[in-house]
Image (cartoon, rainbow, N blue to C red; front, side, top):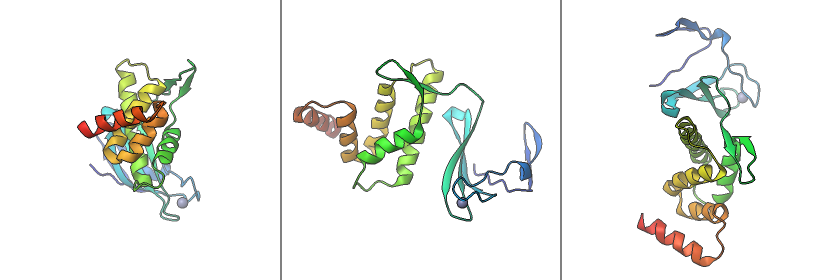
Length: 177
Ligand SMILES: [Zn+2]
């Protein structure tokens, strides 16, 4: 389903009646333009959130917003045992460096990071403890679908491949699946 609320227009929603969007303007984070357009809306996190893709008519910057129940941030347990909030930007950076020189678009990387966040939230809701390793596995799972070379690069960093035989073993696994 696609929704495109516009400032000043009223919309009927099932649960809340009339909603007027004049007071819910999302400013462009880059140029501060006062009215960004929603170009795509879909449900995420198993229907518990709405993901909106927005575009600034002034500078064409595109970004994503989420609407979700207010809840505790998604915490990730690191190898050291320390816990930190899940950071989608960090996931993007990690994947970006694995994709250097590969035919993978920024949009694909952003979408991957969103999918990983969705996966992690669902897993957390199901009671799974989210660790760096859980996040890494999810990244690999999605990266495999996009680019084999980037997948292997990410795997070699993430899995701490010791030598070329590890790399070959992974390659063989990849070819088999
Ligand atoms: Zn802008």
